[in-house]
Image: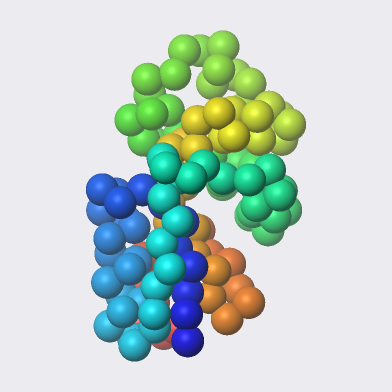
Length: 112
């Protein structure tokens, strides 16, 4: 079995998710937001699955460093998508694809 984990390598939540998946014997393919970005199609899928509100991480350092105009743009799905395409580190982490299922923000896969 293989899971695809999207995030940034120094994120504690991403590290926990990868460790949990590996403990379950699940191979991990890692996609680094910073290096590879995220496609509009993936964002559409994630926003459809979780809602734009949940995909935008309003607790991280990148969000806190944005000016108020950029933060306000995230109030609509279209604005949130544009913001996330430009600043992928504002995406809540990790996003995990495993066995045809998506999860966001989950770090414990002991029940996977």
